Image 1 (spheres, rainbow, N blue to C red):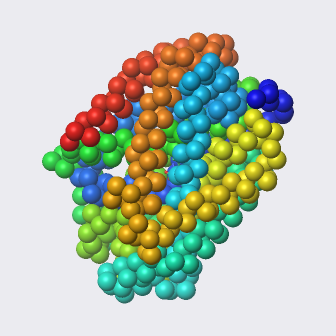
Image 2: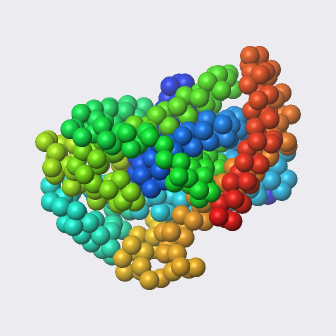
Length: 450
Ligand code: TRP
């Protein structure tokens, strides 16, 4: 392959714009849909403590590693790995980009569900009369061979439209408009939920740790949730870091901001959902259906529920959209940087490909439910390969690469421009070299033996 022609790369316009875009990537279905039901199934507060512990030690270090590699490498993940001493390590970056593609294929299916549910909330057809009707409404919607596929397509159209407009006019501008809206919606919803009579029991369940529920599998669940939620392990944050100006901002500071916003939203979403679930006497451990089945019945019973239902599904859709954008940006940045392709066309073509690859995931909820590999349906299989395997593995390799291989270049670039970084950099290096890789291996092995 010939040396890519160096072209002027786009940059984030402002520091806030960058933080909101990165937080937009981090805050997604993982925070609002996945985190609460995982906590509900895994001992409430015990899971929360584990998750926070992992997030603020390993997670934040991996996030910092990604942002720094992107900033110093000044390229998409593949180019950045190559520029920082790549060799065989670059293969990990290729895998990451493929995994981002695969994650988006089923993430977008669920994103489509959120769009459809905005429509249902607006027309009062959530089926929330009772648990049975809500379950049937959701079950027959996702099992339909056509509707969810169309909404998956619509969701991808929105993602492509944002990514196609570029870093500043597309991704940053979407983050600056959508993230404040998201915070506001979340605030309105959580205030409503915690003031419901009986909400206190939910909060007690949520915050009271039940360590008897903690097993090796719980720890793995917390670890993969931490990575998924921070958007690390696949190169998305490398890509976002690469759009930072050379004139550096205070990167540890921004890493902390993004991490705090991400776990703050997850904690708040849990508060919202458990308050509502207990106020109306539902089962907190009802799994993935918590958002789409349990909540609609609650909205039905709640005064002003129709309004809160729309607000909730808009919240979910916005969160999903800004995250999906960062997933598409990984392969797009590769083709734009390394191959000199046109951004808009690349985004469109990849969008179509991702749409097609996602169709089996959608159909696996209905007509193709019996089509399984190792007992997993298409969506479960894609989720297993990416979230449970590729992301921890990607983070493992990334830590080793950042801590051992790229470290001299990263140190030279960072320490020259950020004198104060000394101590933080030392701690980070230690975590990247030893703590994080060992913890990831230990957690994976212990979990598999469990
Ligand atoms: N963090 C997002 C969420 O919580 C998902 C996500 C977006 C992601 N971009 C990513 C996960 C990149 C891994 C890698 O829903």
